[in-house]
Image (cartoon, rainbow, N blue to C red; front, top):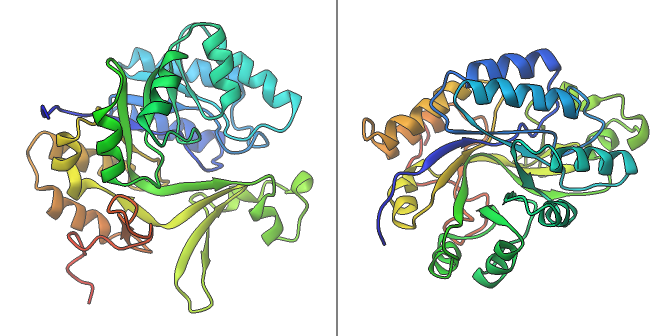
Length: 309
């Protein structure tokens, strides 16, 4: 395969952050070397830091700063108000949309608007990718539970002109439920959650009875407790012709993460050593299990922090 230089993308913020924190975050991210920024609420419509028009205003500012902006849709829609927001985003006429459910795919296909297939769409084969490409998909994000072997198989049959994006850093988005786990943790009903997600800017960590960090609860979304870090696999990602590397926003130190990946892409730093430095600051360790075809929470062995036994 011909090696290529991937772009860096900043995925949508998966947590509930106040408007001021979001504005500050994106102001700082506009000065980083990310090429693509995804904007929008993908988890819960009760998170109203921005409405659809305000997301579009922010998209214009980031576009003026030289970033490619993509608007992300929700993965689980349950109300007419959520469908109204979905239609507003799909009909924006200016920015590409990341579809995270098949309703968005249908709306975008009917408008003949090229779109991105987000992690909420299960693309497990090149046949599925070809079908969705026929509906207008121009880029797909590999489901986080797939392995490098599966990616290689899909890439071998990937339709011409379609880009591949891989989630390479952040807590893995694993599943969605109609039930809000954060509200339940506080013995609150979902409809009166009191916006408790605001108390957990990077999710609520769930441990096993043995005390091992296992999952993170993020409203209706379940994430990994460990942080996926595929920086040590940079050479292989290039060999597999991956076009875009997705970094998932974290509340602290995101500039360091972006610059670390960018420096490795430029050939200025060693990926394994750089990953080791990043992993040293992670409270529950790093993982690459799914990429290796193993259980997802498997720790990255090649980039274990030096101060760990």
